Amino acid sequence: MNRDETAAESFERALAAFAGIAVGEPHAADRKMFSIVATARGAHTRITAGGFSVLWPHRRTPFTYGHYLAPRVVSTLRLHAPSHSFAKPFEIDEATLARLGFFRGGARWFWVARSIDAIVMDCRLATMGSTPPTIPDPLPPWTPAEKVFLRFEQPRPCGHCSVAPERYRLIDDVLVCLSCGRSEQVPGLELERATLEHAAVAP
Image (cartoon, rainbow, N blue to C red; front, top):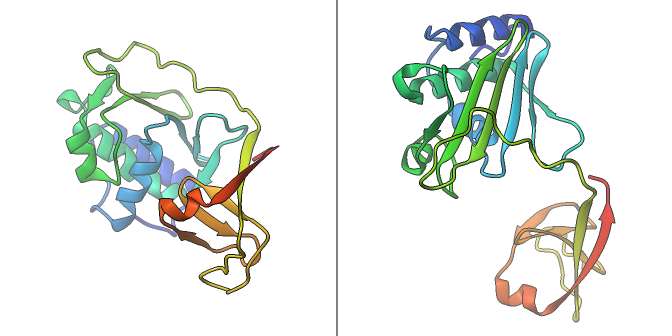
């Protein structure tokens, strides 16, 4: 992994990885990046001479990552594709995924293809007992995200700044303080003592 190389240079290395050429030693960032492109909710990844981007379900625009991370993602996928080939869609089982990144939720299907100016990768959650279709199902379209807040009956000081905001943002099982912006995980029993409030907004 070379942070100093240009996006075009990273793309050339990604093309080399696509062709089966080694592109460097494993790095600590590999696990996190692979987990991002192989998320259970599905993802559409594009690698070009202009950069490295990932689009998830219900998003309007893709998120851009360091282009130097792209070659190792391609290399990892090729290593675990049947016969080390991207000729057809393939599945990676959950046990293998667990060794490659921070995974849960089952096996994944992958589609990896090259065009003139891009490498395109799609990931979807695998359906047990089935084989991946020739073309992946489209990702669900963008929809306004719903923000969820928690309001506690008794003032609850933030574990970081000690301020007791009127309410907290709730993301999964994590509270985000609206005063300092930091997050903390809290027991489910504590969440049950609060009132949920919803607000539909754009992401």
